[in-house]
Image (cartoon, rainbow, N blue to C red; front, side, top):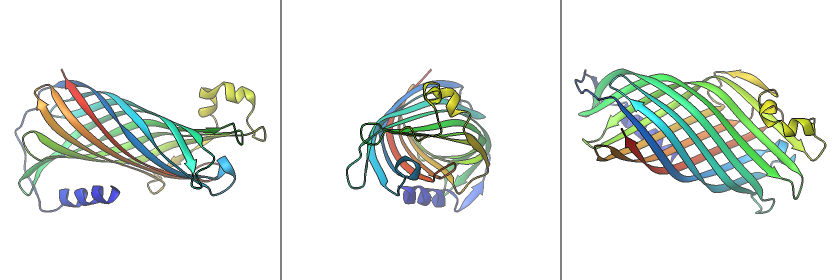
Length: 266
């Protein structure tokens, strides 16, 4: 799917001729619910003290509020996933949780045409807190919480495929990210039961700041929209996330997500 995203980006950046458009978009608020699946693969040396590959596919949902005008768009969203991942040898099943709140504000920079298709380029700011929770207390009494609290630059290009269809491609470039890692290794951990019982405090006090770590934190989105009626859109969303270590023992993780949902406008 990442290859598909790259092809779309190539198409959207060839044969470009700039032109202003006179289309006026009425101010619209929206509520949206998306449901789908997330496939995760990770090598977490701190979790197992080895290079075991964990993987799993779990259900995920996304709830968001949005506002769009002819000059900007604004989104507030909350994504969550609950399930399990297993090691490559199909043992060591572990509970897996994802919590991902975010806020995005982007302004229209330029309208242009590509092969006769209208495009709009946006740029803005994105705030998010990505939190992965991995637990297996039954076998080896381990808990791992990995968080990325960050500020990103949002680059989005919206391609109008037809009167009722559009495709938006987004890249989130990390600017400042606070990477936090909490490892509980069956009593051998540096963390105490107090740290474990005060999760919010612990998640905000055991990490370090990273600046413009573009090769170690990659996020790409592709959103297809089909207008069903004046007040209802059907959407398909694809998301790719990659992170390559940050704090303490190395962790390598990437996820692919596919979600579908309805947007209700008012």
